[in-house]
Picture 1 (cartoon, helix red, strand yellow):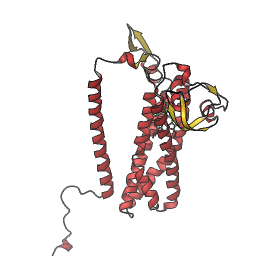
Picture 2 (tube, helix red, strand yellow; picture 1 turned 135 degrees about the horizontal axis):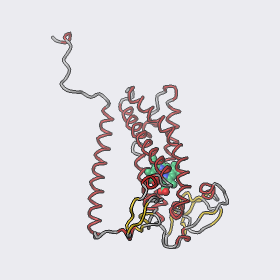
Picture 3 (cartoon, helix red, strand yellow; picture 1 turned 60 degrees about the horizontal axis):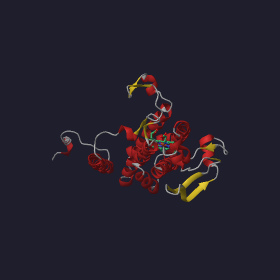
Picture 4 (cartoon, protein in one colour; picture 1 turned 180 degrees about the vertical axis):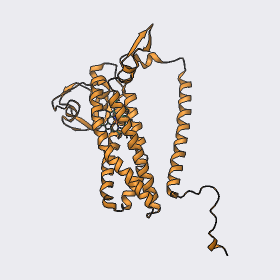
Length: 297
Ligand code: HEM
C-alpha cells in the first residue's frame, strides 16, 4: 500500500502480477523489522510491568523478580535497536513518500538545513508552526545525513498532502515513548545488576509503563496510515476513488460500534491482567490437596 510493486492493471482493476514482488516491496524490510521489534518491546514492557506490579504487592516473590529481570533485559536490547531501525525506516519513507515525512516533521517549505521541530502547533491555515521549539539543521542531518541536505516541504506536493497535525503529534508520541523505553530499560538493568532488588520508585515506573508498547505501536500506525493520505495505495489509488456505496452515517455507526467493543475488551483485558498479576502465580488445579496424615487429628 505504501510502496506498491508487482501489480498489474487489468480493465481498471489492480491484480497481483508477481506475488514475490508484492510481498518483498521496497519498504518491506523496514516495516517488517520495525513491527517485529515493536511487538517484542510491547511484550517485554507488559511482562516487566506486571512483574513490577506483583513485586509492589509481594516484594519477596522470586519468580516475579526473575520475570521482571527478563522483561528489562529484552527491552534494554530491543529499545535502542528500534531507534536504529526507525531511522532507516524514515529514510526509506523519505524516498517513497516524501509528503509523509514533510508532515511528520511539519516542514511547510522546501529548504536546505531544515530544523528539527521538537514541538509546535502546526497551523494548516497559515501553513506555519506556532510555538515551535526547533533544533537548527537537525531534520536535514537525520533525514539526509547531511546538515545542509535539502528536505522537501509540504508546499511541493500541492493538494496531495496528509493532515499535518495528527501525523506530527502521533510521531512525537511514538518516538517519545521509544526514548523513555530506552532510559527506563537501562535504568532497570543497572538497578538490578548482580541480582540487586529494584527500589519501589522503579517498580512503580515499570508498572506505569505496562501498556506503553500499545501506545507507541498505535501511534506508529496512525503516523503510517494518516500519513499516506490522500492515497490508499501510494501513487496508484486515491482513498476518494475507493469509497464504496456506504453512507457516512452507516460508516460512523459501524466504526463507533467497533471502537466501543474493542475499548471494552481492552479495558477488561487490562483489569484482569493487573488483578491476576497482583494475586501472584500460585494457581490451584483440580480438587484441593489431601491433608498430610500427620496433620489429621
Ligand atoms: C524511537 C525511535 C523511533 C523511530 C525513529 C521510529 C520511526 C518510525 C517511522 C519513520 C515510521 C513511519 C514509517 C512510514 O509509515 O513510512 C514508524 C512507524 C511505526 N512505528 Fe516507529 N519509530 C520509533 C519508535 C517506535 C516504537 C518504540 C514503536 C513501538 C513499540 C514503534 C512502532 C511503530 C509502528 C507499529 C509503526 C507502523 C508500522 C510501519 O509502518 O512500519 N516505533 N516508525
